Length: 234
Image 1 (cartoon, rainbow, N blue to C red):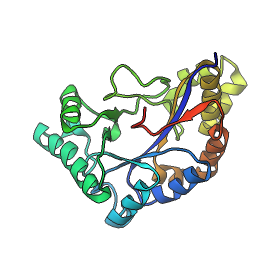
Image 2 (image 1 turned 90 degrees about the vertical axis):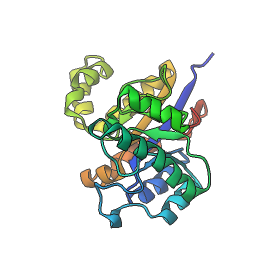
Image 3 (image 1 turned 120 degrees about the horizontal axis):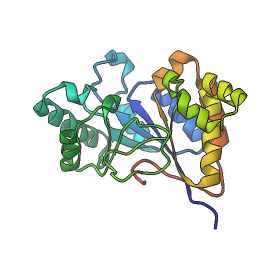
């Protein structure tokens, strides 16, 4: 029996460049969950998706909540955190006219109080930024990921493992996150599991990494033995 393989992708913040990223996903018929903070204070208003653009995205991709203004939840009061978690859900539901069931913790920062708030708000899946995991996890409200579309300096120990101690492969994967993402996908195909690629459209643009991202999408798309799912469908 062939191993079960699932591919899912998610993209954070609700930047206007998410529209470019969505075009790329559509080109390769890949699913995407867009975690939107509709009033993200880290961007100028002109850089945030408008209500109309969020609705446009929702017609082809899943929309998830990412708080209202994108604070790190442990740095605000419990009352403010509850407001961010609940109001982001209701605002987005008003925009797209459908239930919002997925959530992503800004910066991956949360406490068990926030996990309970997420559950009580009615979310059924919540994503962290934990990487190099290849299963949904024991708790769907603290779900991990596999690969971030970004070069991480602190990932060297895990990169060495993916490279199977090969020095040349280690150097290639360390320098080029796209090569690492492809190698991790190939290992997931061989062993089975969930391959969760995530990132930020604005970060990809700032690094000039659109070609890298497309290279990864081209490699992971269209596999007969792979199930392609949104985060919520996990």
